[in-house]
Length: 136
Image 1 (cartoon, rainbow, N blue to C red):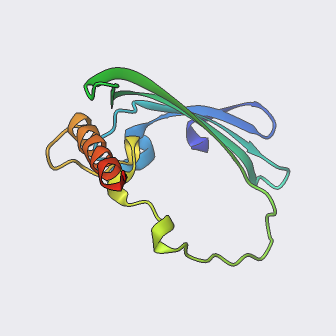
Image 2: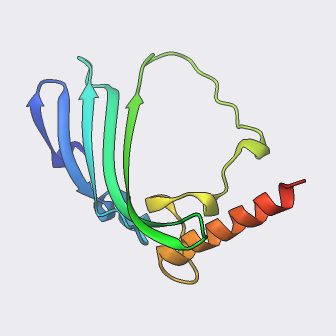
């Protein structure tokens, strides 16, 4: 990231990466063309904050179940602190883990049917089947 960045002031890096640059060998398909970032570091050059931003075209089911075209804009603001602290990481219970197939956007696995539209339709179908199965 830093090699693609400019530094407008000490302790801050700004830049833009393409999805292909960011994901390199694991890049398969993404509706995200570019990801902008701002990285803030402390005096020891350790990251203390990372803000990422991207937009992607998407299709979501409307009230009638038909797919509507739209643009999704995501901003993620991550803070890092307590560098050097001893921590213990425990795996979460299985019922709190998201399945790979349910990840949206650039992290979505390759769709065997091709393209992200089918992937979103499959997700919408599974969600509606789940809601129907849980209704009293």
